[in-house]
Amino acid sequence: GIGEDFLPKCVDMDLIDHFEKVTDRDAAIYTRKIVRDEGIFVGNSAGAAIAGLMQLKDRFRPEDVIVVIFHDHGTRYLGKMFNDDWMRERGFLVEEKPNAGDLLKGKDLQLLSVEADEPVLNAIDKMRAHNIDQLPVMEGGKPVGTITDARLFDAILEDAEVRHQKARVVMGPALPVIGPDAQLEDVAKRLGNGSPAVLVELQNGFGIITKQDIIGKLK
Image (cartoon, rainbow, N blue to C red; front, side):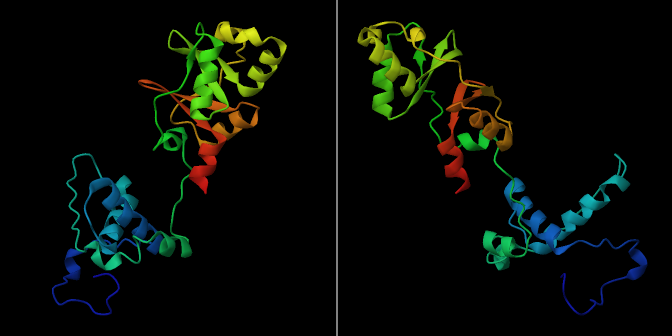
C-alpha cells in the first residue's frame, strides 16, 4: 500500500513505464468523491489512484482501455478523510459556496403566494398565518408583484377598505427571478439591492430565498 517502507517482491520494474506523483490533498479529496459520487467505500490509496488517473487523462486516446484497481477500503479512514474537521485542519477540504438550488434544499418548495385578483385580505391572512413579511403576487403562473408588510401598513392606514380590493392595488415590484444555478454572490447581490427575497425559477414553479435562508446555510 501507499506509505509502506518496503518494496514487495512481486514488483517487476521492467513492466512499469511511469510513476505519477499525487498530493495528499488530492488523494483525500478523490477518496471522498468516489464515495459520494459512486457509492464505493474506498480508502485513501484508491483516491490517490483516481487522482493520478485524472492528472494523466490528457495522455489517453478515446480507444484506450483504462483499468484502475481500488485496493483499499474506507473503514480505517473514518476519523481522517471522512472527518470534515480533520480535512479542514489540514487545508484539504474544498468548501464550495452554495448556489440557489442548494439554498432551497430542505425547504418547502410550494411557493406561498397570492393571485393578483385576490382580495388584499387573503394576502393579509396568509402572511399572518405563516409569519412572513413578504408575499409574491402571481398572475398566469408568473410573478407580477410583491406585497410587503410595509406596503400593507401604509395602504391600510390611508384607507382601511383597501383590504377588500384586489392585491394588485397594493403590490410593489416583483421579486427578482434567478435560476437554481445562480451563485451565492448573485443571490446576495439581489438581496442587497433592497429586495426582501428572490424567486428561483424551477421546472415545476418557483422557490423563494430570503436573507434568513442564507444565514441558516452559512452558520
